Amino acid sequence: MHVPRIALPLPTGVHRVGRLAFRWTDEARRRTLPVWIYYPAAVRDSTLEPVLNNVAWRSIHLDELSARLGPAAAQSLSGLNTSATTNAIIEPAIVHWPVLLFAPGRGALPTDYSAIIEEIASRGFVVVAFAPPGDGAAVLDPDGTLEAPGEPSVDRLAADFSFVHHELLLLNRDRTWNFAGQLDLAHVAVSGHGSGGSAALLAAVHDTALVAAVSLDGDFPAAVERGGIRQPFLYLSAEPPGLDSLPAAEWARADRAERRRQEFWDDASSGSIDALHARVAGMYDGNIPDAGLLPAYAVPVMHHQTRVGSINPRRAFVLTGTIVAQFVTDAITRSRRGAEAITAEFPEVVLER
Image (tube, rainbow, N blue to C red; front, side, top):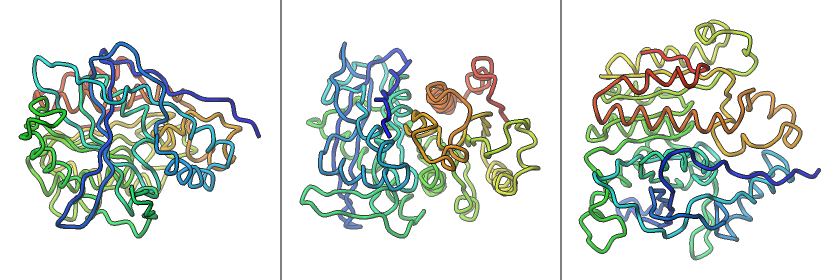
């Protein structure tokens, strides 16, 4: 099967986007995280570069995508280019840039979410996205060692968030570091998709210095069990498959899994100073990563029916990026006005506080 070449949509924010790649090692846990930092950049044009620019690693991830989506769809995704410019100078800011940490879902890399991450960065955020060995997709180390996905651990992933946050605090004091003095580390939020979102909430439970948490269609029982989150948190939930004819208010009645997640939401939101549940009609879980761009005929029928909704995929990226950026901005400014106004631009979003 031939799948036409697909391209990431250009971010809609006012800032161009730059990108840097690092590997940070947590010596205490003997754990190394590949890290990508996306940021507002002082560039006019981007240069075409694969979202995952390590050739050997891209080949390994291609096999992972092929097993899930089929070889033609995987090849198309593997050929995506980022719109971010590597090693660009960070755009000078009147005030320091707020920071959002991001972890992928099970079986994925941060680069699989380039559209949403670049959208958020274009709206004035520094997004620090990391690949958690064992909890995401396979990670290839510089020495050629392959760390395959293993037994997932929400506690390990939450500890990764804490390590990345602490590493940023240390690096910001190093005047030779690329972003020294440029980041607003008094306002760091955590986010993730699926299991990454679950761990983000748990990280916020452990670290009250984090200003907000965002879960993109992830469960969060661990955060509830550990005492609940106090900071503002956003839960963006996709529509359960097959409920396109029902209003969002009825999803929990018609779907058992959604009913369970609604119960977790009720428990988790009870202690938060500002919890916002955004349900998006027509958007399924598979519309969050870049794979949502694939045409229906390019992926297995069951995958498309259960993972990809009726929403225009580019609209899903802009919608998600807009909600996340605005919610974190509201958390920083202690406002609710911005997030509430989103429904005027995106009527398919139903908000619940």
